[in-house]
Each structure stands twice: as C-alpha cells, then as structure tokens.
Image (cartoon, rainbow, N blue to C red; front, side, top):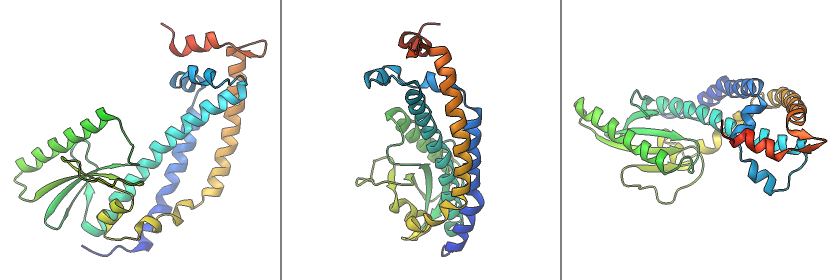
Length: 243
C-alpha cells in the first residue's frame, strides 16, 4: 500500500472530466424527439395538466438528459475509483463479468461492483450483481486463489447504515472512497477539480440544448398538436399503441 497523492487525483480528474462533457454533448446532438416521446409516460403529464407544448417537451427532454448524464457520469466515477485504488492498492479493472475492480488488501481479495448511488437498481439487477459475485468467486477459486474473497458493492455517493448484505458488503459515500484509498478526506478532495472548464463546457452545451428544445417544440406542435392544442390521443397512440 502507498499513500494517495491528492495532486495525482486532481490531475486525473482534469484530464478525464472532459470526456463527460463531450459524451453529454454528443448524446444531445444525436437525440431525436421520437426517442424522448417513446421513453416517458404520457399519462403522467396529462394527469399533471400540462397543456403547453413547450413545457411538455422541456420536461421530457430534461428527464431524458438527466438519466443520460447519470449514466455517463457514473462511468467517469468508476474510472476514478479504479485509478485511485490502483495508486494505493495496485487495484485494477477486473476481467470477470459484472466486476469493475479487484484488489488485494489485508490478505483478502476484494471484488467490487461500482455504482453511482445506493438506489442504483431494482431487485432483478441486484440479484444479477449477486450472481456475478458468485461466478467471479468460483473463477478465482478455480485458479487456486488462496486469499479470502470478499464481494463489495461500492456506491460513489450516499449512505447505507446496514452494509452487511450477506453475500456482499455495500459501502457508500465516504465509506467506499476511504476503503479504496485509505483516505478519509478523498470524499471532499474530489469535489473541487470536478468543475474544471465546467463553465465553458456548460455554456456550449446550453447553446445546443436551446437549439434542440426549439426544434423539438416546433416538431411536436407540427405532429402532435391540432389548432394549438396537444392531441393526447395521437401522442398516447404513438407512445403505447399497437404496431
């Protein structure tokens, strides 16, 4: 084990955070109105009495982008976690299915599935993660690994006051970052460099966002509005009707 150098973490973030902004912008550029309309519940918006085409399109667009950003940023945090653990414990990206990180610590082999936050998946997804842990353990044991193998669900933010889940440990927020870095301060040390060039990149993104919002609103009104009113029947059929 070696002590984590905070300047190395800052350098890694500044070098790699641009990929988040680039992928975020690329996702917006490729997006089409039909994709957004098919993924959200039209009944919910009708129940909320949303009858303004611009407001409806903006809500749909924002919900879609929020989900995309969570995924893209989660992948960035996974890379950061692997980098940090690599520096401190010689951790590395695992080749086992569904396992993001593996490393030795205190004579134990840790296999880690990194997630963004504590509420990352439904029961089926959690079950799949547990099966991935079991399969990875079988593979490591078949290769004559003598160390005790411990499965970890690491969450980059949040808390879980009951970490022992039986088949694995769930470490969230500060507990996770401390575990892979041996630093209690890493949780806050990664905050400051995250806004590297954020002002400039966000300004560029908002120009493209406004353009898409205007184009989507115009397209929505052309296709799903009659005499200035939303044609909910047509919208619901487009979203959920039989092909």
